[in-house]
Amino acid sequence: MIENPIVEEVRGFRKEHAAAHGHDIRRIAQALREREKRSTRPLLNPGPKYLAPNTSPRAVRSINYELR
Image (tube, rainbow, N blue to C red; front, side):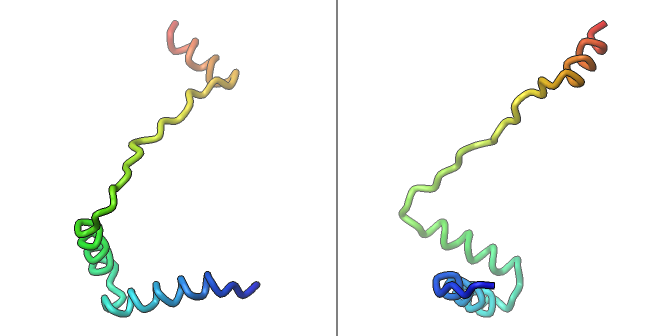
């Protein structure tokens, strides 16, 4: 695996953050929610992503069959 100093730095911060919260995922998530509340930056919520309808011939045949 290629060593990347930026990736190593991010992993180091992640390890420090996890250790500060006792490696407890609930405490880590709570800390992140609190940090998010204190932030003055706007939060983006793109909303749900909808799947395109299945238009394959097999799907279209089954839909037509159900409509009969």
